[in-house]
Length: 121
Image (cartoon, rainbow, N blue to C red; front, side, top):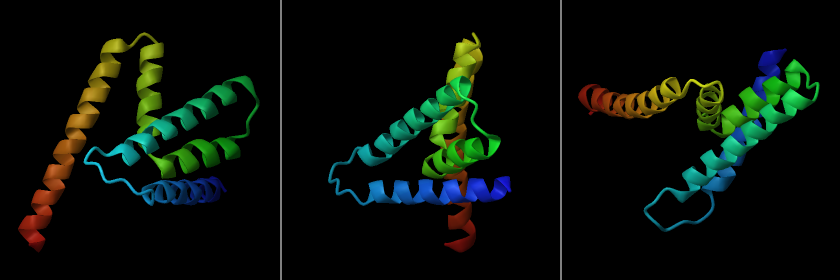
């Protein structure tokens, strides 16, 4: 059943992300992606804060956090995990996680592109 809740939330989050991408923007700085990531971070922060105060069912949490926020942007989860590490006094681990996430993902993009060029180009 949780798969259904995640799927429904993910579909809605993906459609929301696509709707934002339709906004016309001529600049070189990726403002729309930045806005999407910031909105996603606000959303997952709100949902997490609300869940700490209210009794929200596991199904709704799967729909909202994993589905909606995850479909909208996985950056929201990354931001929440980084924040929780800092909040728990694990500042060094949080910084390591943030830096390694960005660098490893950039290297992953490079590797994926290199492999696709090599085998499919």
